[in-house]
Structure formats: structure tokens, C-alpha cells
Length: 128
Image 1 (cartoon, helix red, strand yellow):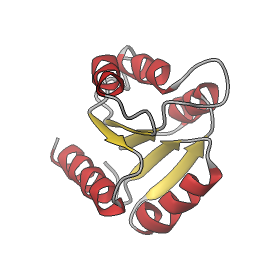
Image 2 (cartoon, one colour):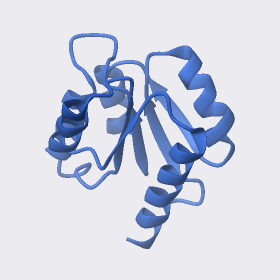
Image 3 (spheres, helix red, strand yellow):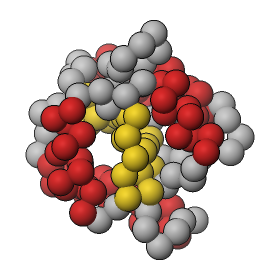
Image 4 (cartoon, one colour):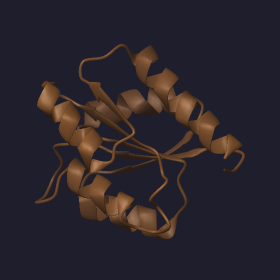
């Protein structure tokens, strides 16, 4: 981990991106992607400490497809992934965890809950 932890936010909703910038962006360096191919480009050219992702994204692939890609990539497989999604059924949570997400947060959520989880995974990767 570097001095300024780096987070990839994979989200196609502009309002949510602004929320992340105004909250998590105060403490961490954030890059954003709106689709799985866009996220893969970022992951191939830069190092990240965490991925925050929505399940529903622009394009044919969704957040679960990206999670499976990350878990099957030698370089990325230990990268923490937090799903933050409006898909709020128990089966949605199971699908996220089965795909390899470390955490699942259903929208709407208290922002402090998200910040606490992000801080936890960033601190854990600093100790690794």
C-alpha cells in the first residue's frame, strides 16, 4: 500500500460518484469507472487498495462479472471488493459473496457504515 490509498469506484450513477468524492475522496485517492471494460482498463494500468462497485453497470457485464475477473486474476485476486448496490434481497447478497466480494452493502445505507468498511479494508491491506 502507498501513502495515499487508492480506490477504484465502479459506478455509473453520477450522484453516487459525487457522494464518494465528497466523503471517501477526502481521505483516499479515487478513480472511477462506469463499466466493466472501463474498470479492467484501470486495473491493468494502476494499483488499487480497494474496489467499490455497483452491480448494475453500463454494458453487457455487471459487477459480479468484474468480481469474478478480479478473483481469477493472479495479480488482483487478493484485492478487497465491496459491493454497494440497490439489489437488496438476501439472494443478491449471497450472489455477491459467492462471486468473491468481501462485503455487501445495500442502498440506501448510512454513509458512516460505508466509510467504516472502507477504512477497515484499507487498514487490513496496510498490515498485509
